[in-house]
Structure formats: C-alpha cells, structure tokens
Length: 128
Image (cartoon, rainbow, N blue to C red):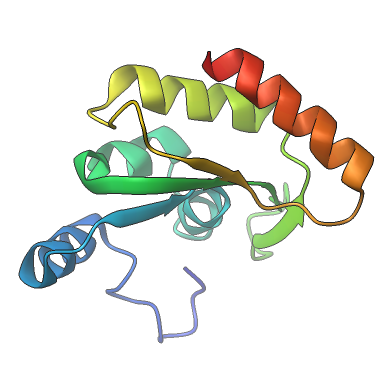
C-alpha cells in the first residue's frame, strides 16, 4: 500500500479475501509487502496479518523491507536479506495460522549469493 489513491481498496484484507474467493485463487503472502502496507496504513503488522486470509496461502515470500522510523515517509520493499525480525514474523505466522505444512517459502534477496545461502540455511533450520 502506498497512499497515492491507487491502492485504497486492493490492500484491504476483506477485498483480498473476496477476490481470492470469487476467482478460486490462493494467496501469495509477501511478508515485506505486508510490512510495507501495515506501516503505510499506520497499523501494527500483526494486526494486518491477522486480518488476511492466511488459510488461502499457497506460497510465502520473505525479505526485509525498509521501514522508516518517520511515519511521514513511505516504507518500501527493499528486497534486503531477511533478518531476525522477519524470521520471527514467519515463524509466528506458520505457528498461529492455518497455513499448510507444504507451503513453499521463497527468499527474495538477490545481492549476495553467499549471504543468500546463509539466510536459506538459517530459515530451513528454523522451519524444520
């Protein structure tokens, strides 16, 4: 969500659920997009995530967004390597929702292959 007028309804959990239901689709849960949306709507991330149709999740994307401390600035999906905060959010979602055990998790980070492998190994260990 960016407060431009273009995203006013499409990022609302009720709209997302209705759209997925109408067309028989699954949800690609992009955690950075959710964090950006929550920040830009001035919501707590957990509050926004609880309202999403997580039971329809078919894949999860994880990366670290840029979330400015100044609420007047917009957050953006920076595609940085996910850190501890993102790992905690992922673990909490998987533990507390109806997401299937076989839903794939994709790391959306492209800058450094060695770092990507470390993130992958850390996430794999945490998820197992």
